[in-house]
Length: 260
Image (spheres, rainbow, N blue to C red):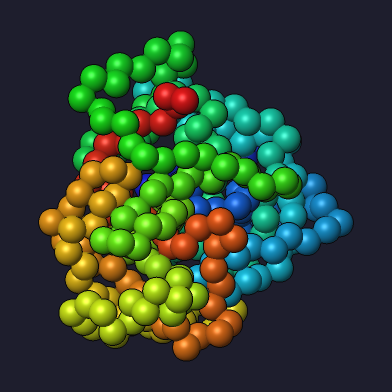
């Protein structure tokens, strides 16, 4: 996508292919309601809450008998009995649904942004020569999929951020963390920001430049960081993390997953 967010082709019950966003910040797979109804997927009599920095939505749930991640050289990965939340609108223009972090952590793989490839190592053997180990970990809450987290240092401020391939920016800090650590007026301001969520709520922020940010154990010279407005009392924040490390940062690397 234009914002460096990774996508992959999938088929759903043999139909497609459809374009899905690989969103490691997502807590569940998702598909547009239009496609779920067109394919007559199995409707589940419950709703799930999807959370983002733009607020929460409550979504229907659909069950596909299988979805298949289509490989570029004829290979494929089949995932049976796959539950997906229903989306009223596409997550991005030209994108039909969302795949969570579990599609990266289930098997050893590499997400190569420069080559535009997602490479799986089906025999479990992946050469990690040249890949430094990152100060990161995975975690899953009950009834939720696994997510990835990375430790970040902003000078004396140490925090945990969700590694979010579905977030467009470099690094976003939640309003409650910004407020608690008095970061709103601490750094040079590049510009004010605002985003509108699917629920119509406007989320304001401030883009600043922070020197010497350490991400996953590796120091950057400086990094543009979006601060959530500390006056936004309705802003959603993470239960176990204080921000999001997004695609604008992650797309500068080839990411390897599966070395536990």
